[in-house]
Image 1 (tube, rainbow, N blue to C red):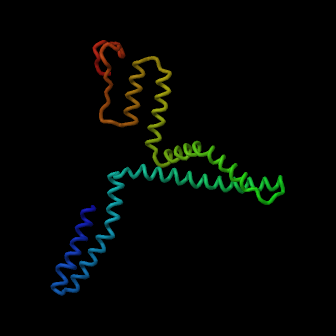
Image 2: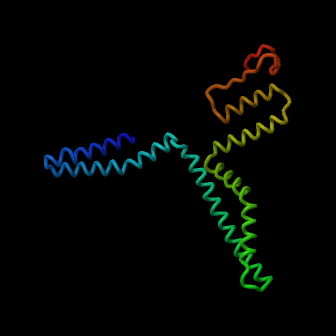
Image 3: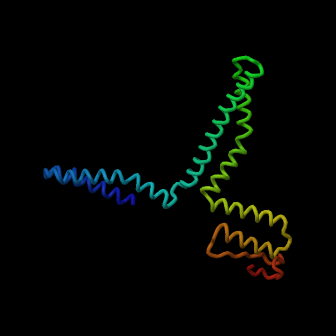
Amino acid sequence: MVTYTATVTAGGAILKYIISEPLDLVWLGWVGQALVLIGLAGFPIAMGIAVTRYRLYEIDILINRTLVYGALTVTLALVYFGGVTATQAILQAFTGQEQQPQLAVVASTLVIAALFTPLSRRIQSFMDRRFYRRKYDARKTLEAFSATLRDETDLDRLGEDLVAVVRETMQPAHVGLWVRPGTGWDGNEDGEPY
């Protein structure tokens, strides 16, 4: 698609500057100018389609981080300024003094420092659930499997669970579990695939 827009732009430039000017064909110059403008306007659109369609530059990660840290920044800024205002109002009510900004700023900064990591995790989890459902489902499946891995003692059942988790999270065309000979994983000693 980017090649098409570059071709349209180059064709318009050739029509305008190489063919129409020496031959003094004004109408061909207008056509060339229109093609150049269409090609230049279509170039960012073609780049956007290429980036989103072929996942160039891992744009989904960039969008995810932008959503998470943008929401986190706005939330923390609101908490900070609300905390400063509330702390000043409380201190004025108790002490009767007009100026006490240092204590209010320090208290709000400590609250922000304490809230950063839990709030960041919550916002990331919300964004994953809302916009990246497949990633969220895969993570939940792996967490459930890790709990099963801790509790399961039957190795045959564990092998079946492992194959099921790989199928569900990674969705490969084929899944196989090979066990090293002599381990006794599946009851036979020859290391056949599970």
